[in-house]
Each structure stands twice: as C-alpha cells, then as structure tokens.
Image 1 (tube, rainbow, N blue to C red):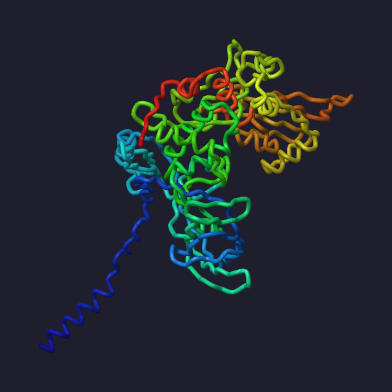
Image 2 (tube, rainbow, N blue to C red):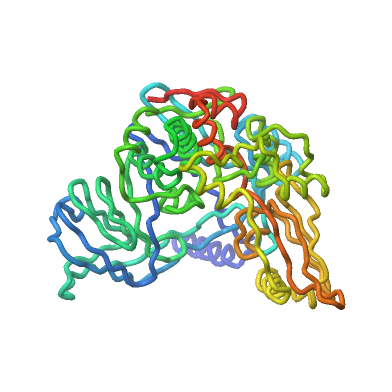
Length: 512
C-alpha cells in the first residue's frame, strides 16, 4: 500500500512539472440587443443629465418607489461612487434589416478563415401589439474588437461593464431621507415633477446613471402620450389640421422604427431634443385631439416599417437619404421637388439661380398665410456673413488644423437638394476637407442647413475680408418638409396626400 502511495505521489509531482498550454480566456461576444415590446408600448425620454447634484421639486401625489408619498417641496439627489461603463469597439462590416443577407455575408466571412473575430448580432425591437406583431430588427456583421480611434467612423459600441452610482436623496432641510443604488423610480400619475425646464406628470420619473457615468433624469410614458408631447414641440399647433395629422403619423413611425436602435445601451430610448424628436412637458387639447385621430397609424413600405424622417424647411427640394447618412438607396426617401422648376441643384450655376431667384412655385416660398409666413421668412432663404479671421478660427477649432490666411471655400459635392456634403477650405498653409452635411453646418457655427453658396468681400489688394454664405432651408432635408406640409394642407391637401408626396410608395397601417 505504501509503495502504491509513493508511486501516486511521484506521478503527481511529475505531472505538475509538465508544461501545459495556457487556456485562453473566453472571448466576450457582442450581446444581442433586442427589446420585446408588448402593449402598452412604453417610451423612455432623457429629460436632462447632471454631474453630481440634482435639484428638483414635487407637487401633488408623487410616490417614491410606488409606496412612499413625498410631501410637496424641494429635494436634491446627490450622486456618489460613480463608475462609468467600459466599452469594446467593433468594426461594422455590414448593417441590414435583411436577416438572410446578413447571415450569408457572415457565413462567407467565416469560410475565409476569420473565425472567432467575426460576429453576427441583432439590434432593435420586436413589437407584439393588438393587431399584429412587427419584427423591426437590424442585423450587424462585426469584426473585432478593435481600438477606438478618432478616424474610426464605422464602429459598433458594446459595453462590457455596467455603469454604477449611489444616489442620496435629501429634503429641503438637508436631511437624508433615502439612499439607493443605480436607479430610483418616482410615480407622478396624479402629481408633478419639476426639474429644469420640465414640469411633467402622468408617467414615471427614473433617476439613474448613464454609460458615461452621468446622472440622468428619464420620463417614462406610453407611446401615444409621448406623441402628444412631441407634436406641439415639433409643429405649431395653429398649422392646418391635415399637416398636424401628417406630422403625428410621421412622428409615430419614427418612434416605432427607432425604438431599441437609438441609444441601444443607454437607459433611455430618445433624448428630448431634435437629436431624436423635440419634446415638451405639456399636453394641449389640440395635440390630444390630433394624435387620437391618428391613433396607431404608422407608415409601411413593402410590409416593413418605413424609416420616416422630417425637417423644418427643405428650401425647395428634399434630400436623398444617401447623401446625408449614406447606405443603400431607399425608394421613399429620395429627394422630392417641392415646386415646378427645371434646375439641376448639383450644378454650380443652377444652384445660384435657385438661391438668389427661387422659383415662385416652391411650396415653402408661399407667403399668403399669416400662420406659416413667419417660418417662411425665417428659414426659406437666409444669409450669414463671417469675417475672414473668424472663419480661420472656426476651421482651427473644428478640425484642429490651421490653414493660415483663408484663400477659398469650395463646395466639392452636393446632394440632389443642393445641400453641400463635401467642402474644401484652403489657406496659405494648407487645406482641410470636411465631409458630411451636419459636420459642415457645425463647422460654420451651426448653420440652418448646408444648402448655400459662397461669396466674398475682398480688400483692394484682393485678400478676403469677409465671407458671405447665402443659403436656404433648415434641417437635413430628408423626408417631410414641415413648412411644405403646412402649405399643402392650407391648399386643401389631405393627410394621405401630404404623406404620399414626401414618402412616395408608402401606405398607412393602423397597428392598434
């Protein structure tokens, strides 16, 4: 027995000396990010962000975690022990709403030997509603992880750790009344929550931490209530009724189409600004009536939810989505003439005629209605003048590159609406190229649109003294022109006619 034990011991010692290859850690795969929505569909809106301290007040019946009634008064929430989420980044090789197409592409890549560095994930939402179920997912084929660089524009972000924070809740006397980790819910069904510019009621208020480690105030409500707060923020309620109806349908379609896709790793679905849809706290009787009259109606194209966009003022021609956000062409999001004219807005001569002598047939050039007229005056045609040195400073601030003394600003590429999508700014020390409609607007301090032409005021020696940007329209130009919709409705067009004009080939479907 002793010999046997000695033999076993020797085997154990020898085996411990044998080199074994290290077992690689399991790879962290990008997670499936699909939300399942049932009726009633809830929407979470980011009202505001804060760093360490949030001051707010409550009125009426506001319950803490659905149980404790908070007395009327002022409160503060202090955020401590904050940890932001950590991310991994993947390069997007394909994004499509066609599962078979994504799967074929994915399998072909796997056969090339890329192996474990290629992933297929689905993102978006599946809706299980009263009248039907809708699969509104996108499919991503990714490779990575990769390092994040400023030059990387085509990255997929994936949190690999959750954000964390501890909130301490104080009353108006500075007494600590509650402490909670990560999130707190306030019920405002019969009371009001006041914070910043918002005074909201009728839903839930959620205080939590976003992935950047900021405190965030979220308002949660059902989708129809949300739209009643979006409508008056996006279109004046004294616009014609059928324009308001068209706006409510487009806004509802936008909401359904982007739930689960915008901010997919944040605790909210949309912001309260025009980066998503503008949102306000009050519900007006007109907005309530309009949204109820179109209840559940969204736009479909070939049995799929349409991607419905809208903007303030097209300036005479809406834009093709491919020029603004790239990707494959979408038949119902091609540029549409908002008038009868034969100008080529990508031609350098015709675009000047269009800006300086706009055809009278253009819808948003209409000036006979007192309600719509202020919006026409503000956005249809506009002019901005910059001193040369101001341009040079803006270029340096935005691009990080000094160009010296400004020599020229040259549009390189325009979309079908005339909006500039690629521009070169040259100086005595070099040139910079800026690509993207929004980036061009941001470069010049937040222009209303990138539909403009460039002129100069020069000194006697020929040097540029000032730059004149003469432009038209407001917004990206894709989808429905809100001012144009108002004028069409003023002329007797019905909601369906307006929607078909801006989204040719779509049809309305009532989901519930």
